[in-house]
Image (cartoon, rainbow, N blue to C red; front, side, top):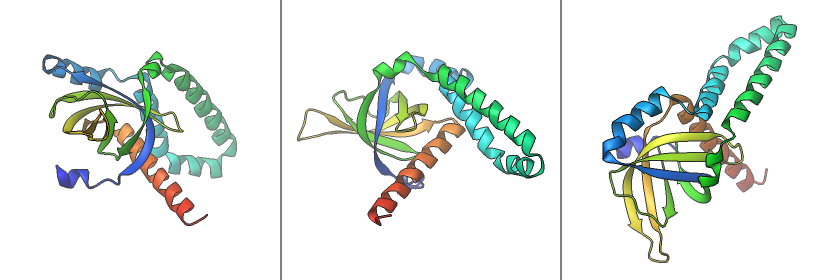
Length: 187
């Protein structure tokens, strides 16, 4: 597992985060729901992922038929607006902004509740400043007591992630790395 976790760059970041322990008797039903009944924001993420996969085709259309490209851009903007409205969710109130160490494979953060090691949790992430939402089923791989506070350092490994959501995480981490490098070089 260590080699898999090391394939992805890690960054310190600030995200909106919430998690819920999945009881052992609920695992199969929750996993079925995760794969079969995507959340509205997962559908949006998948839609955007598919659009990005077709960017080369769109560029060719734009060169050959600029009118069609403008029309497709308007349609895409309208779909973006609709999906954005779908993802406005009351569950945001349950998320807490907090510092994390994150990669496309896992996250660690501090919390006052300590889930049992090896347990599965449903993790809700809202990336900042983009506001993109992700739901991930993660396994608790380590829980450490923080001696300086009454909190625990919780490390999660992302076990079940939709492909589009993994791509969003990779791009988010990469973007933050580029920002950090630019500011370090004074650009």
